[in-house]
Image 1 (cartoon, rainbow, N blue to C red):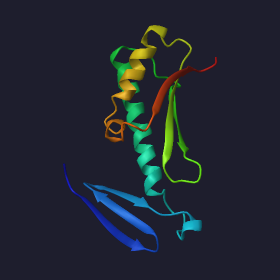
Image 2 (image 1 turned 90 degrees about the vertical axis):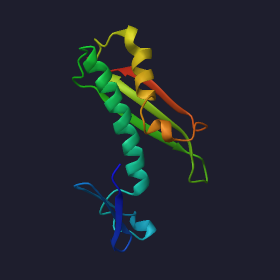
Image 3 (image 1 turned 45 degrees about the vertical axis):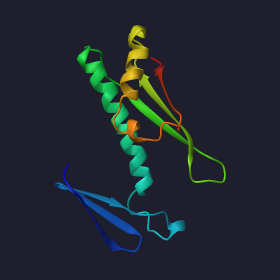
Image 4 (image 1 turned 120 degrees about the vertical axis):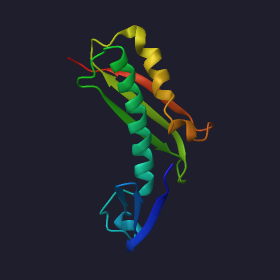
Length: 134
């Protein structure tokens, strides 16, 4: 894997160069930043959601299941008074015609996400499927 090159362009901003991509981060104003970019932790969670979503989408495409209107919601729960996550809930929203027989299998596919599998196994991550309304 290529190296990540980190630079500090000013204030609370931190940029990461990877291949031809520039990933910019910042902090909220309450933490001394300018909110000019997402916080690193936000990008971490976005990566988890994107990875689980990609695994679900690929699962559907290999079975010719429509992904029209499909989406995913990721809800992290933070422990009260701490900065640690208590749990993460991932919900895949599918069309009403999504075959019920594939619900457990698509959840298994989402749970195989490589980002998820790098997270401490003691952190509960609950994945589920919810049908969209017509």
